[in-house]
Length: 314
Image (cartoon, rainbow, N blue to C red):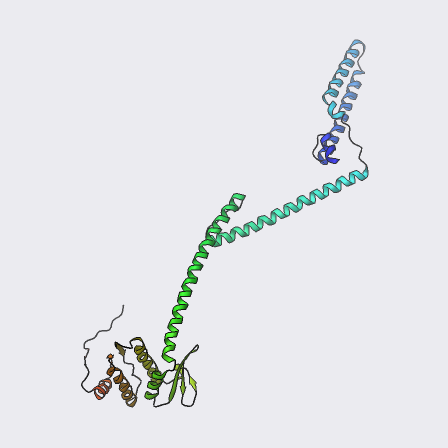
């Protein structure tokens, strides 16, 4: 009903209707004031001049009325107080909706600003988000970025899988040395005079068991025993890798911390490996190593003295 009234009076809102009503009243008052002033001035004339002036006034008034007839003849509805109150409530509700829309718009603008900052942080470049086409462009670039990340993720997962498989294979190979540890256990026990009876490999690493059933990590062993353990592991590992055709070992003074008795025992173990077909290239700066070699191998070894060596680094 209200919209029909607006259309009838060619207005779009109650505010515009009120403005037209005020304009009508203002025009009516202005016309009446002009006619009153003219009549007062003409009343001072006499004779034919008065008649002519009166005629001109009436003609002038007719023109004013004709020029403003649409406005003056517009019939305004007679709204009750209840209707006016309802219209005001409608206007208040509309204004509240407009305010809510503006708040939503402000919140959306702030969110877009944060999103734009996040996109710049991710892509390394700013992207405006001022229109629907900007949002579509941002979506497309983020999609490409995510696809690239997912591709790298798949590659990383493949590399991790390969690494884990290689790690497991390496652990299995290491476990083979310790499982049953017959050769390693026997040789390590021999060179330590039976003080250690087992060598095991666990998730925590290598563990050595003493004759008193105490488990020790390599770091808890003495320096000499520590060197003996890892030297024996190298020898046993060599036999596992080359079970048929033997190779050679290159060692650099592995027995520096040994006393004479322990040194002789270690060379006896080394001799057994040489008799199995292994070759050993032994670098040393200790004269007693040559004595131990002669005592163990007699003259069945080659001795090369390295003279005038110069150490340098870059």
